[in-house]
Length: 91
Image (cartoon, rainbow, N blue to C red):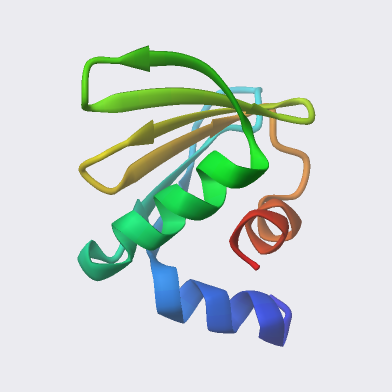
């Protein structure tokens, strides 16, 4: 992990879990105090596709689908490089 990504990881991300599927999907858990800031960054850089109540927002960023849960969980589907994607979104 590159140092810039590592700093972002420490500031915003609690954990990253890769799915068992063939597809490259990841679940990212955020630190509780970073949820609002990360939500703001994602909503500015991504296209909102669908909003499900006040809990889940679905976004599109390039070829990646993003489901942002207001509880601090983000599901990324169709990801080539999770580190590079997180760096793009969170810088």
